[in-house]
Length: 247
Image (cartoon, rainbow, N blue to C red; front, top):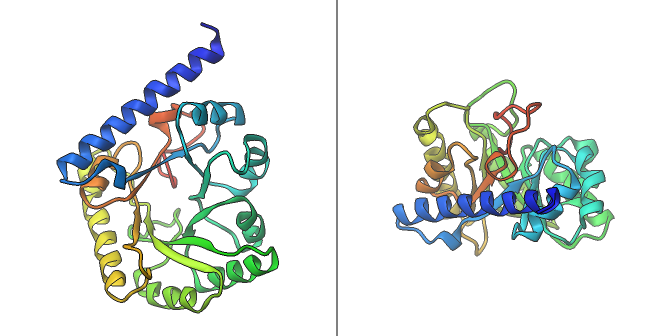
């Protein structure tokens, strides 16, 4: 077996292990495994590696930075997978984000909502699914909207022409013990449920994008519908901290 085939075999094994963990956590919580979307976080990984991941069954990929994705997504293939932007989005990168990504998880302000809606019109994009990133841990190094800002952002999305609110996203503080993240996941679910009761998601039930390699089982137990897993699929990257939007 050559090195490329070996790498692909390793990716397949890692992916299958993650899928098994998702299924086990879902069944433990009396949920259906197929109701949980796995986003493989491909940030910092080469296009060749991402193509191998797609070959073994990855269908959703998460990137943190628009600038990095600009070179990788065209090489991998814009339509080769469903691309999720899971990192902080600066307003001046909005146009490229709209062009590159299928879903944006990190909408965090009224101004960004208006900017994205305007750009969608300018590039003739029919609809852009977005999630609001909520800052539950209030860490200086992380982005997200305060709970008190949620209603105003939801209203801005309602008033937009081309954005569709599909759910909420959170990045809790990193803990060695995954159980310590449970209150954050639970709080995001409560916020989602409140918005659901107000009809914020239209006919949809409201996605919960939460949980990474070290804590996604807890997130699933608390209702996650999207988990963002990088390290358990692609392996460690020495240059990256675990406390980023997906890992």
